[in-house]
Length: 273
Length: 264
Image (cartoon, helix red, strand yellow):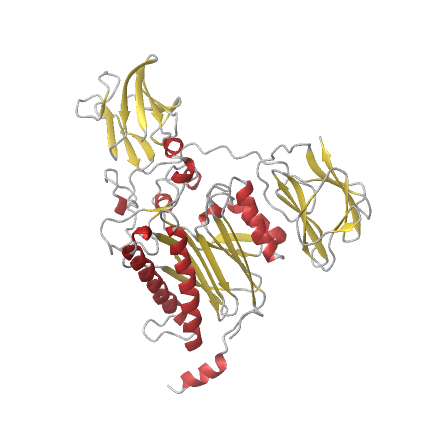
């Protein structure tokens, strides 16, 4: 099922004003409702390799898997939509692939990447993430962060050690507690939410949300969200105008109209059992 | 590595490097930072250090602990904070980012758990006082730090009277050459002035023609957002690219003429 009539996607990535190269990697496929963003880490160019493997592998494997199954089918064992299991398995394979490269090639030792993936189907969005790359939802006039960072800072906020305000002054920034490709196994946090017409989803690396306040992101989407590519460029530009201390990447997804799954055949098929 | 410089009446007595996760301050000799003075309680305060951040907690001392002149129970220490215990002063110095190199320091790093596969997400207990934090269990509450004094909010300019959909504006930076302003020259609002205070100000009619003016460190830039026709600046239609505005440029948008100027 082609989702292009229902979904519009725009993306932008930039090295920033300080770093010598871009270790972020992004991929979008509006046809299957997939967006992937990864923020790599590791010495020399290993970070780019890790994030590159993640986006390439997840895009191609998701495309293949969706050719075989509809993502809204229910998984017989868990009862949740197949999208969840699909993403979990594909992310696990990406983890293995990065971990093995890191362990077999000395120049890639220790490389890893954060990850945020969204898969839209049947008027729902499934969001998987690892680390501190985020997904936000802009609905109506409000921007809301729908992923919770796997980071030291977030844990300290959750435990009450730091207030959100104090966290901005913490020296312990950019310490993630989970990453893809660092350990033999990793657990992605995967959640599914109902999507509505008019929603704009923002995937971003910490280069955006560390440099641009949520209020300014919200204001940008409210002001120029009608022009998605311009809004993506504007967000990157704001991060750079504020210092651009890190690579900055954004993916924007707009739900133009609803996208119910083609239930007809499946409903008939399932009713036989 | 953060350190504390102990002084009395302006005379430096000793320096302590905060290497331990838990450093105790008090009169009794077993303290990491011993201050042998009767105004200091036996166990007066502790400092919890988690990687590059340190938190001070008064342990219910008789004479209390001040930070920058204010009594505190719990406090998130910031570089150059002065902790006062009795007549003694402890200056907190933490310049880690500068010495480590800003760009290197800000690189994302993984905090690795010692045991692989410990996927259990430890739920943070809320009242533990004496847990020694380990990298793997950092979610344990060490100190329920109540808000360190909140950073003063950046001054926000007064809301613009213009019906632009833009929301909050960050601190108004002084722009070189003056504050960018739009004056409407034609139509029912002719004569009205619209100061460009926000990072983004949209102009025009949604669904018909909209342009945005972005306020950037380099100046003001106008970009087409939506609509079949593009804004016209000084008689020339723009393309999809951002166009830098100069003083006294004339903009035509949704059949309204306006002038951009820099107000000093």
